[in-house]
Image 1: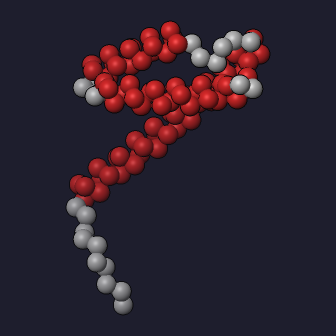
Image 2 (image 1 turned 90 degrees about the vertical axis):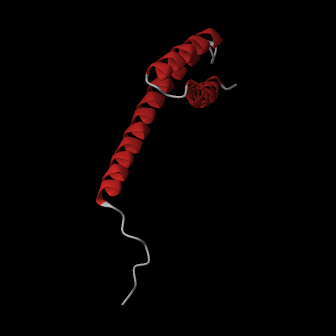
Image 3 (image 1 turned 120 degrees about the vertical axis):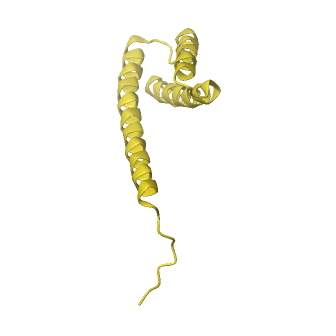
Length: 100
């Protein structure tokens, strides 16, 4: 007979953790959809010979996201860093289409 050494998790905590797990899965699904669209953008840019990065669009987008984050009570610096990482990955993907 094995002994369960893990303490019992309160029902409310287990339910909240379940909600977090669901939200995490939704975030990943949304991120996958976003990358599918940005892949299309990268392929279009490659076909049309456009630059893989648009610094003005990126800065405008970051400023807009920071404002939205503040309105929702989120740490706007965290959101800026998060999206900067996402943008960097998108640019890396776009450059792979351009062979750069």
